Amino acid sequence: MKFCSHCGHTVVFEVPTGDDRPRHLCHSCGAIHYVNPRVIVGTLPYLGDQVLLCKRAIEPRYGLWTLPAGFMENGESSEQGALRESWEEARANLRVDDLFSVYDIPHINQVYLIYRGELTDTEFGPGPESLEVELFDEKDIPWQEMAFPVMTETLKHYFNDRAQGQFSLHRGVIKRKL
Image 1 (tube, helix red, strand yellow):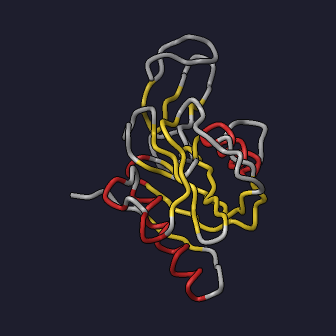
Image 2 (cartoon, helix red, strand yellow):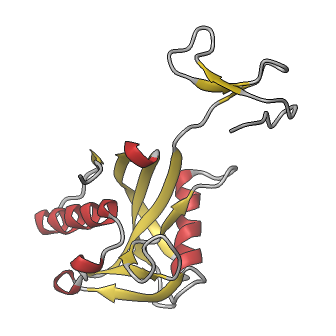
């Protein structure tokens, strides 16, 4: 950041009084510009023993499989955002059961909230960000073609919980692969 979005003056990168980390500061108008993690919301849609995956039609990770998810928008709850993303990416209608996984990805400043939800019909299909949308049995999941580690972890927990007959909230941190 070079200029203040409030007044247009040049900003500096320093620790504000009373803070513990550097921020972009405008000495002209006094604005402190905070940059915070982005929240990604999505769903793990299921129908019977199958889960719904989307093949990405956009970068990053074009052509790989994922659960429907995307950035939470201002003015919506995390659940509303997850349902919106499910519609945008998979034209999927579902009934949310509960929050299923929360993952922090500090090295890219993201927090994922994934809700487990049952499809209410089979009238799904690719939205503008998906090449394909398909229901998969566990044995047919394209594990080597998954777009994001967070989605792989979420699916592994889902199938393990389903085998145990009890779903719980899963939390974790996805670390950068070296």
